[in-house]
Length: 94
Image (cartoon, rainbow, N blue to C red; front, side):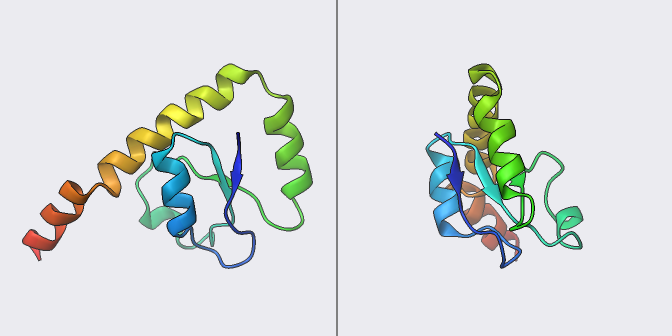
C-alpha cells in the first residue's frame, strides 16, 4: 500500500503520521524551503499535483522490496520522531 496524504499544503499531517506508524510509504508535497528543517532521513516521497501521476507510476511499478524498505524506514522515522517518548523528551527539554 502507498498512502497519499496531501499534494498542495506543503507539510505532512496526522494522516501521514498514522500511515508512517503503520509502515506505509507516504506521498506528500513538502514545501521545498521546509525540507531542510526535517531530519535528513525523512521518508516522505515528494510529489505535487503536477508530478503525482509519474510518482505513483514509479512507485507502483517498482519492486515490492523498494516499497517494503520505504515502509520500514517510515515506521522507524515515526518511532524516532512522533512516538510519545520522543515528544516527551522534547517537551521536557523546553
